[in-house]
View 1: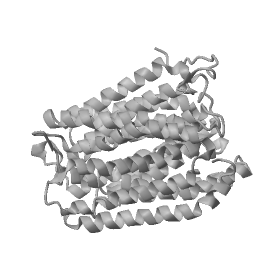
View 2 (view 1 turned 180 degrees about the vertical axis):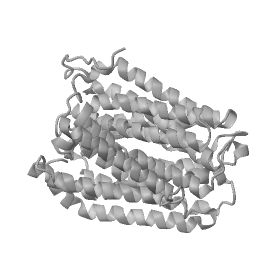
View 3 (view 1 turned 60 degrees about the vertical axis):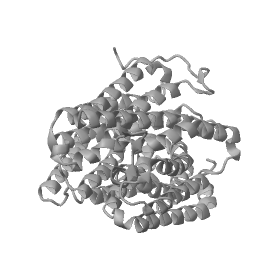
View 4 (view 1 turned 120 degrees about the horizontal axis):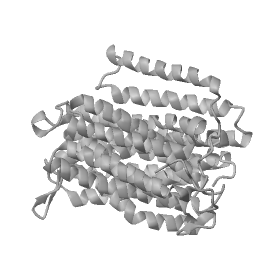
Length: 488
């Protein structure tokens, strides 16, 4: 079936729950991509640090969870490549498709290749493919709405519901397969999930009409050779850094955080100095900077679901439910349940409130503060000895994770599409994911400081820092709104 033929018929009048019909296709492909991604990453840490006799690779626990954090950061770092490919070569719509193909290949490599070779090849492919798909699916959704359309926050919240259905179901299935059949069966299920997502994307591609088909800033033919040379140079530098042990498995999360931070500074500089960016657009890019920093802090705590809380789940939570012991990786599925339950309520609330809703900077402030409070709620749980923390108490804490995420993440996706300069639309979304990437790799770095013996200090300090950052964003909110130049 050809994936290049897209109908040009008008789709403006066709809606889904009051939203553009193309939302349904992007909802589906993102659901299955997140099913495969979270299903895989929820068992990845265990695969890395479990002993060989338990089916793992036998790395140290701190190294294993650090790699998970670094890998998550690299996924978001690769969004800049995905954004660049969309803006300069293929357009957003085609980049989403090809990104999904590469993701599927990565999961197949994890399932089929043994040892660290499978991890290296598989994670590299999944990171590159996810980067291409993630930035462009979100940006493509943003193009379905006119500027200042009050429905956009509600539309992104529904899109987020799809993400979380995938995030909920993926770990459930991979955890059962890993527990009963082995890790490679879990990775195989992730590959099947991505294949299903690609299939539905191709079948319903016409719902997107011509959205995302154009290449906004085409790469001149004369620039192709220098670009290939630059890519090869980056790869060579990476190989040399690895061979000389400048980069190791142990310091990978620190290096990843630093690389993404430097890349973000470069990208902000390019956008703020480019002649293709109008003065009003430049003001909006400046307003994005404090939101970028707040987002990084939020995700440095939230993404510990896959690092610190993955270990916490395995060593501290009593997973016995009516005489049956659930897989430890199911902690990854708890928070998405709350998202699924609350997303429709938030979507309805933002749609009903319209421009009367709190401004985006205030939503960000509330989200970061809520995440800090959620971490403080782990402090009283330190009173439980060993593997005795009741799972229902953790379920309750995860409700605050979900409320905080809904205040910040779908709103962040939506506002990024509205603040983006026209010439950098997809790459602006990649910049948003840089902030998520910094937070995710930081979640791997912070995981080294966690120990069941110092839980009060660990959760208390990280939670308090997040609350302080949220308070600063709240104070800066009027300034940020002014520079957003008409974007609510």
